[in-house]
Length: 221
Image 1 (tube, helix red, strand yellow):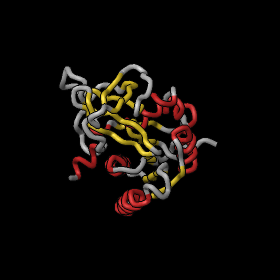
Image 2 (spheres, one colour):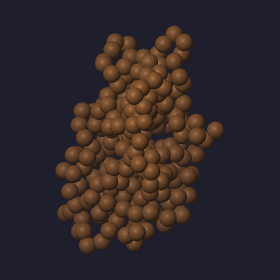
Image 3 (cartoon, one colour):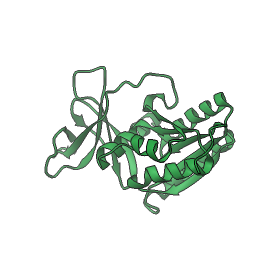
Image 4 (cartoon, helix red, strand yellow):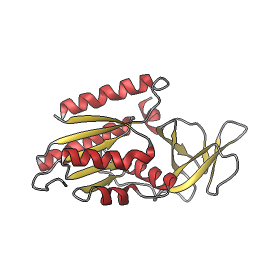
């Protein structure tokens, strides 16, 4: 039986990383405006041992945020192809009226799996409104300063840098989505990709990634 829409309930869907924290805060703001309960759904997609420390740190942050905003938190093991099923299941169980996901997750899911998580969720959870939140707006009200993501590839060069390619090439190093900056004529912006279940976003400068450092890790330094 589909949830009733007589009351609002916000479901925020996050992966590990700083972007998840900002998305939770965005969802909490909406919950406060609507005077609605908040549920945080965490996709546990990182390998257990290799990313144990990362998971411990991020999970402690998510738990603190859940306590701060009096939110329920659900942790689900997942892979990309399971995301829409897990979200719709949690939305129905919690009787969510609003579902919030990040734009980077949607773009990667759509590009690499050949479909749209939006269409999937509209079909599986028609009782809820869906919000796809741009990265730059997950915490602030700034406009999203990038064009729509396009399917691209990175090819590692002899000097250790990575060259951006728009065509499928043999021997590419990473496959992902390129978000071109609106403020340049060059191929500069952000390249988002998944590696061992984790989402990374690295800077692209005129078609070249000089180092595979997540933009959030750059800002934290």
